Amino acid sequence: MIENHDYFKGLRFEYGGRFSSREAWIHPQHTNTTWEIIFMIEGCAHLSTAWGNVDLNPGDFLLLPPGKPHSGYEYSKNSVSFFWLHFHAGPELEEIIENLPHNASLGTGTQMALLCRQLLHYSVLKDYPAQVSDALIGMILTEYEIHTRTQDKRHESRLLSDIREWIRINSDRRLDAKTVAEHFGYHEDHLTRLFRQRYGTGLKNYINEARTDKIRSLLLTTDLPLKEIAQQTGFDDYKAFLQYFTYHESVTPTALREQYYKTPTNNR
Image (tube, rainbow, N blue to C red; front, side, top):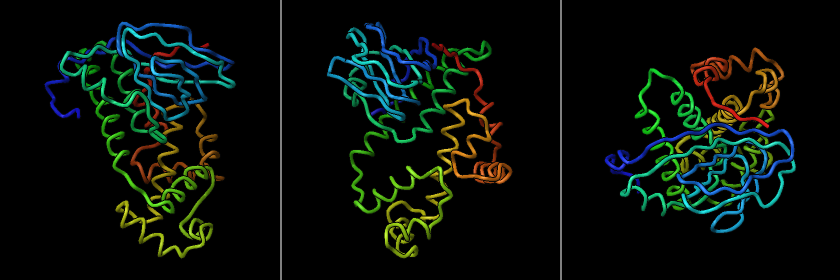
């Protein structure tokens, strides 16, 4: 468990960026001298690693150790995009990182996407010392460790798990508690009570959180115009989209996107 802050003294961010390809692509064979994080944000990348083949989809997180080769085993069928981050770890932290899961799905991964963008943003600003980037790598690893640990302990009921997944898949529609309850054949008051017991929030709030999370994810991981993001998240009225997001996040979509505008990118 990453708890001792002294361990972060051994972390050193080296370099990174965001890779994007709009055509069929395969990862070249490579052996790192550093640890590498790959966080997938679009498409599917097919990698052969020291522990087997891995298919990375949006929201998937991969830890590649130094000294072990990796390469693509199959071409991507569509466009792909991901953050890639290289870092060194001190001897105390090396063993802890080695014991983390090699890869896991973080769902929408909005918090991870935000941390990646913050890291890349501050790493190229001359006024900020290297220690800021080193600390952000520590935050990224901590976020990953907490997520995977919590995921292992989580035992959701099949019903609530199915409802959450259905809400996620239908995030491009305008959902409300009544619509969700009717789809699953329950009264909305009953589902609201179950959600509040399990997650500490009602069904309506959960739907709003999921929708807002989807908007944040599109803002931070794509260059889509705001009007297209509005359409993809169930808004027919662009002004209503702006009011909705600003109300729930206390920041406009444009302001959120421009907070971390400096992202080194290598396109193909």
